Length: 310
Image 1 (cartoon, helix red, strand yellow):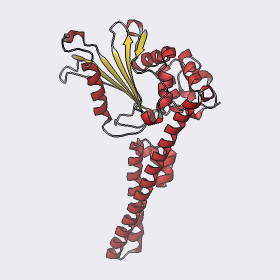
Image 2: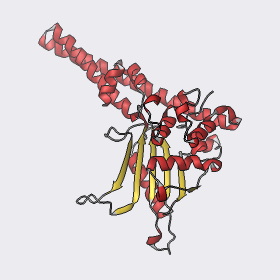
Image 3: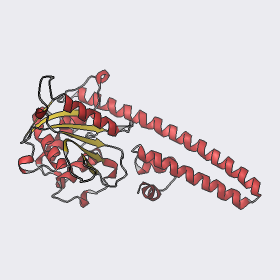
Image 4: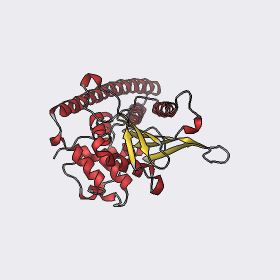
């Protein structure tokens, strides 16, 4: 059985923007935001529901959602596979835009509803080690949330390293994150992920054998485009590594000549190479590349790369 990658723009919207399977999106939102009881979302209106896009009209993977709970709040969910820079500012822009668009010119401010932004990222943007972070506007002195209408939740997928065995059966949050990150590597639905039923239904939608020809065509186009971009980045990084290593070797040779010691020359070369490898690894980690790819690029071991990441 072959599953689509939920991080693919088309697959993400097909799974979470499905008008006929809104319970999937509701389950995901309630789990990620920790909504229970009266706060739990009961119904959603997807402003931009899934439809098969034309290749020339592909857009960003953003879901604008009007959800009904006791407060009738609004939600924005965005899946972003690569770091294009300034993502925090981007999230502020979309959130403030959704907030402002709630009112016509003649309406009063008291009608404004809270807007939640949920960013699912295939790269890291914060220094904290937690894979989910929640951001509020707080009073600096009292640490109270006096301004309550903006709230941001970010899921940094590279920070989630739990195996299937490590996931708690009661943790719906971890199950959803595992689904987002690992589905393309699976060939069957793990028993642990058969509940809640919404995750099982998400797997069913991700099963490509039930997709039509047009959906598969657009999906493959997006995957090919991303592979080409990754190969380009890989080539650029490799060239940068070679250039940096040669520069380090030249510098070390010159230094070695100055001191006239072979041992100093060899140490200088090795030190220059190591420093370059570490810098390239740091850059690659920020780009969201996996450990194995970074190891191939830099020559560092996966254990060394993990230590650099930590």
